[in-house]
Image (cartoon, rainbow, N blue to C red; front, side, top):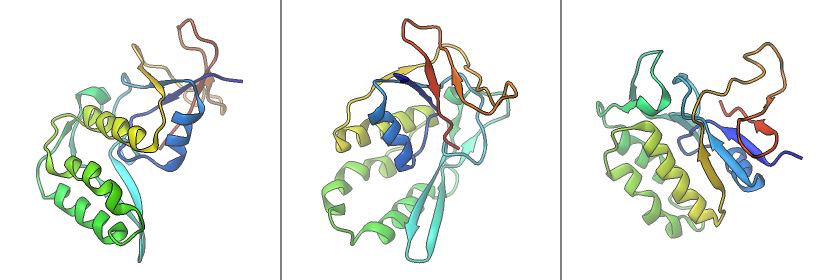
Length: 170
């Protein structure tokens, strides 16, 4: 059994991402990868009465920038649009009132950096879910087996811990 998982950073990631945080004793967040467009790194999907809706955080980037250098763009009114979409989709849901005060600040405060924004969201949601993962950050890029020509996503991180289970969240 693996006791480590490698995850990408995520903007209000899917349930499966948080399930991995709860399942593995040690979590590594990849901070040395280049930004990949159209992934959960700056997008989330919410369920609305009209079906699924994708919410994207606008970012300023070029293809060679590491994820930690990606800046959040303040053009447009995306915070207001995202908050209204969440309120419309979940405002009448049972228990939403218990979480609204914890989630609202992410849409009121300006953040410079996508990675820091995502990690603040991750920490708050872990607190709300009452899960306590040991989160560490990679010091160098850890390629997946898929990038090396294989399909399975197993690898070994240079750490005193055993086999690292790489999990892709796209």
